[in-house]
Length: 284
Image (cartoon, rainbow, N blue to C red):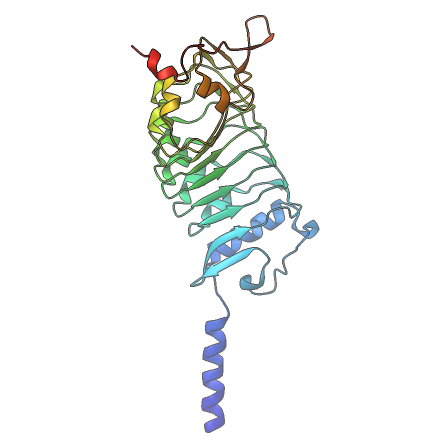
């Protein structure tokens, strides 16, 4: 009888150790595995083993809360089912060969805090549904082939600290909603096809430490309000079509000292106001 009791307790303990994720979550992971040539991943999954043993999968209370398959030779497209991983807090597929679009249903991942699909071959626009993931703190989609305009809805991400979208083909103006994202510390939009002006409202981004708009097609006067960003440690807004005078402070802060492209396609350095260090003194 004692042996039976011990065996019974052992079975209970074993079942609690082996994670049993939901059917929909397990199916979503298997869909991802099959859709991205899982048999050729650097670190493969044994689909017959418990999900808790699968490389890059982190569970908490039998729920998939993190998926980190960075630099793991994923080749293919993201299946729609990936958006069934509704408990995900971290999705990191950095540096693979993932093509196709970001599914519009990505907004279903309401718990997501870290979203990194950088250094892939993604195309299409950033879905407007991304604005529904209000817990997001970091978006890294740089080094892809994303196009279209930045969705206005991205401004709903009030907890976002990092927005890194450089080296894509994003066009249009920076949505005014972006200037209301007061938690932003890093804003990297360089090497895209952005147009329009940099708004005076950039001064609202008081926590901003790194701003890069390098190599776009933005124009107009550089806002004097940039000098109000006291936390700004690094800035590169050169190789746009900005014009007008700049202060010595701003010229020195810019990595390339305010080198712009004029209407003839030639590189020029913007003139520095000789008698003032600060452009703020020129404001009416």
